[in-house]
Image 1: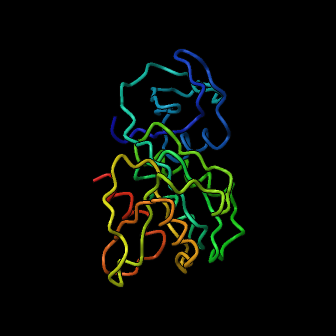
Image 2 (image 1 turned 30 degrees about the horizontal axis):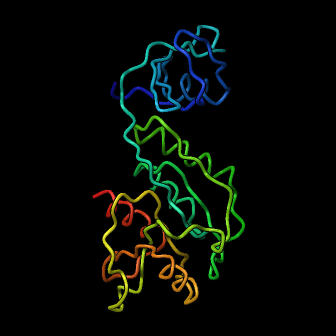
Length: 218
């Protein structure tokens, strides 16, 4: 259904029901897209929908049969200045959840999470997925279970570390702009975390996240 707007309306959608249409949805459909038809999604499913003549409700039609292309990877990431770009790209790459983390070198603690959620929703609508990834409460690095994760190991740029090949990965860890500290590397190595190389260039954290996801999904 090419060129039909896709809108996330929550995870409680029922066929043949009428769901209240917010002012933003009505404006988007009638003023921006100039249509009364759209696709709505949530909880892994996609449905046809039509705006009712009074512009108050979305009447839910049938399920489309479109399969959710997202995956079950959790991206654990240190807060960065361009967290919005990181979330946008990773959502388009299908991650199921985001776990923000505070590391020793984290220098971006003041994040507008309401805005971040809107970015994730918009990226989900655009990227043809049927789910919106969850943004979990922020944790400290010391609170993470490091035993079964893959992490972007920048030590590989200097010729050491990153000797692991990931298998059945469900969690990927990306460090901050300043990289992991020596004590954090020691914790990762001691827990048996799988360090992977992202190449010979030093990447920005948001790009490193995208490259790491692509490498794990390869």
